[in-house]
Length: 259
Image (cartoon, rainbow, N blue to C red; front, side):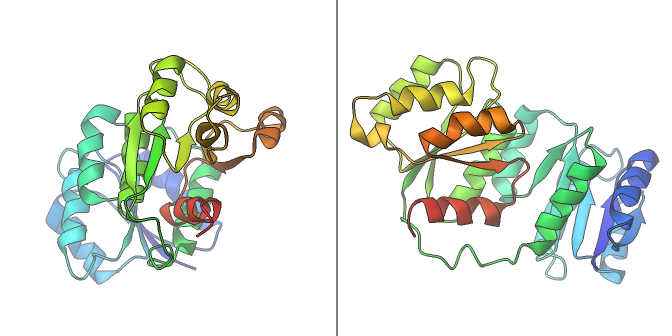
């Protein structure tokens, strides 16, 4: 059983999250964000294993709260989950600055929230970082969400890799970029407005160049079913479901790279 603190200016969101997690046996600490000092005081008095926080809160902005927790010696190791409906563009620089904090978008289902929390609580800091890595190795990230690209890039940077972010404006443009800078591995989403991830995978598997044709590919997606599984299996593509914890992501990448 874990102690989980929930901070949100929406009382209904707090009740929903508590109901989704209480049946798992966790102790819930519900905190109204009256002011930053008040929230930090409660976190000190009832140190949680995990903090779930909203981003946009009038009297206690989520960015300020997370930054304060990361700078507080008593709270710096506390795990954090950001649950927000906030847009990608303004959130991206913040995620890049504070490191890989898992983030899921509102509205979120009870099952997804419970699964994400379980993943985060099971993660042991330092396990992935202790593994060897290909220092400075290039890994491409193709996803239409700038927030997702920022999160994945932060995970990669934290383990010594060089992320190569590609906005999927067109299939031909992404292929040209991969031909110019061929990475060690490709991370790709499935559902993207301009083209689907499986189309990029099939195009790479048909490439004349062996380094692109044999490129290790990891699909990180929220849209996965049996039909997609049948498409990806022959193409030697591994899959992780969003939202993905940093340790799970890096463990799979390093296994795929043979580390």
